[in-house]
Image 1 (cartoon, one colour):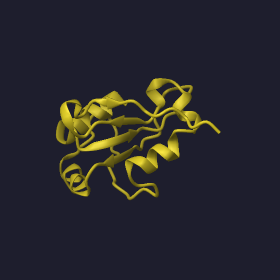
Image 2: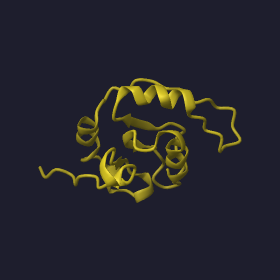
Image 3: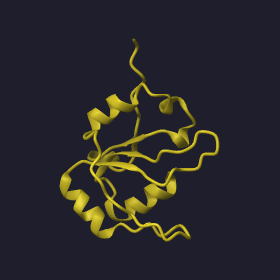
Length: 115
């Protein structure tokens, strides 16, 4: 996750508030896709124009697609009660500040809701 964040931050630091790189909980290997929520739709265009994942020895390409769940609040609601937020820190979805003096820094993920 850290390598992906560094790569995204090279062109889009502070423009996204949610990042999740789904991974196998046991092996910690990712599945080859990620979910990013940009704070403004215009940042998606900047990302698409500038992003290039060149850290691997793969000929895979980066593709963008529209996710079913949109927006920071909706993503928190979707993930906060799932098992993934109780797994190893490296496998969890992350939230980030998009304004103020903490821009680009990780924001605490809300605790699961009590039922």
